[in-house]
Length: 152
Length: 124
Image (cartoon, rainbow over all chains, first blue to last red):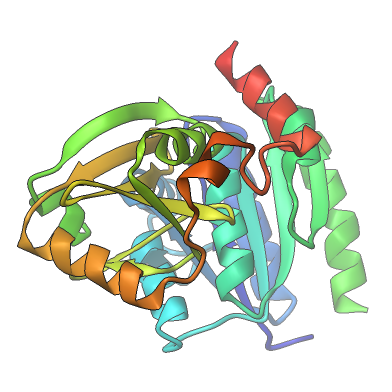
């Protein structure tokens, strides 16, 4: 899968672990040879740009709405999508992505409502779940296992 | 920014779950049509949603769901020349139209337990 195009689709950044996990996952995937793009709303992009000012961890950042538009209009697509979610909106965007894209879907589910969200997902995906808000370690460890499988 | 934010719209419901938006549209529209995620309306708005996505009509107004990552889902209503064109387009396609008798019953997915349980949790 090296060279595959990966989209990290960010949800609302109000849960602290999202930004740290996005930086970590983007860096790990870039180092493994994947072509990684991070998509989010303005708040997500600003948080990532300030956290990674020199673009060391995130090479490509794009607007989420524009990215979805490009996928729908078949100007763009990805091989793999990690959809971050901690609320109903995140799940709604992820479901939309699964419907419009050919990408293999990974749902990264976190926050206090993680278990209920996991049960509510109805599209085909790999679910990576950690009911955490502030401590990213458990989610990071689960993503490490998933990434090991991806690079095999 | 999509064209929606520059149009004259009315917010019928705000900061709700997508399921609640669907149910409101189904119960409060003259006609209900179901579209796929990414269905384009107006100049450049692609509907974000969980299938089946309900889009309704109320007179000459188009009633539809609008979801933002940080603010949940909204039900918006737009009534102008463009909404009439969109309603005519839905009528011409006719796909997924629900009659008044069906509207009174359950929606195609409303009885699914996982979404119901999540919706109930979301209200707490």
